[in-house]
Image (cartoon, rainbow, N blue to C red; front, side):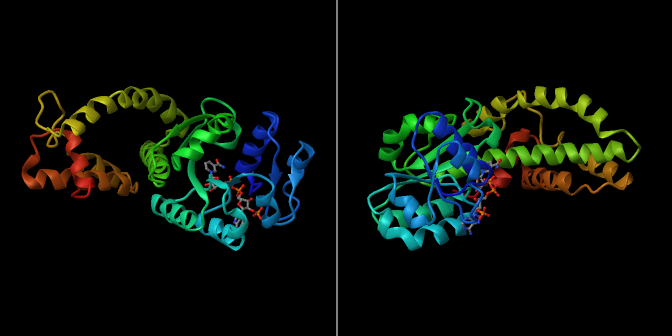
Length: 281
Ligand SMILES: NC(=O)c1ccc[n+]([C@@H]2O[C@H](COP(=O)([O-])OP(=O)(O)OC[C@H]3O[C@@H](n4cnc5c(N)ncnc54)[C@H](OP(=O)(O)O)[C@@H]3O)[C@@H](O)[C@H]2O)c1
């Protein structure tokens, strides 16, 4: 296990509990003490760490830290399997996969959709993509961390699915923060807004499946949808402006709606916003 940060420690702890031998390396010495107490061996150098086992797991910081750490020891990695659980973009994951292939390293990219406390529970989701052989060979070990899904042999897919889900989450949170600031401008506590908004948003999430059906079907004229004209949000943007609250998150959504209306699709369903976002593939 390369990296004894919060996530690396949670992953290694789980492996030790499941009876797997673990050797840990961390850039800053001393951070692995808890893992060593739990039974891990500590390696003084990356080169030493990667030669102890056929399976090497990296859980570092961002993309540059992975190459910075592993490129100098690529000769020792040859013939082994690398599972990279460091968050990367899809493009970065593909770059790592090409680098690994060029050096005869079996590469499996992983994206962790969980916080460290969830590791070891079924609720922790980890997506994998890249080497199918590596996924198949280590499926049992990977399952000790949570619910694993193999997303295919394109190494970028795990990251893409993970970051798409996080994108949905952060934009939902931004919506909550904006609404809280609107009512907060007149003194309503965020706690009250949260208690009242949470059940409403949960109910609205039920609409995802319907929107998905429309998007996948590609026909935004299917009857029974809220139209884009009806979805004009300028009154909400104005309300926010009147209260002196930054409306930029909502204005961004309004711009996506307006683009489709301007292109003559006002009578079609709200899901057509998807067309404002997607590239012309
Ligand atoms: N924590 C979460 O909730 C969570 C959830 C999903 C995914 N992740 C991903 O898991 C990865 C690790 O996150 P974390 O929560 O464990 O972060 P963390 O607690 O900040 O630990 C970061 C780890 O990366 C190491 N590191 C940073 N830069 C490095 C470099 N240039 N070279 C070598 N090692 C370097 C750090 O070593 P030092 O001790 O020497 O600084 C430390 O071991 C990240 O990619 C993160 O996005 C985390």
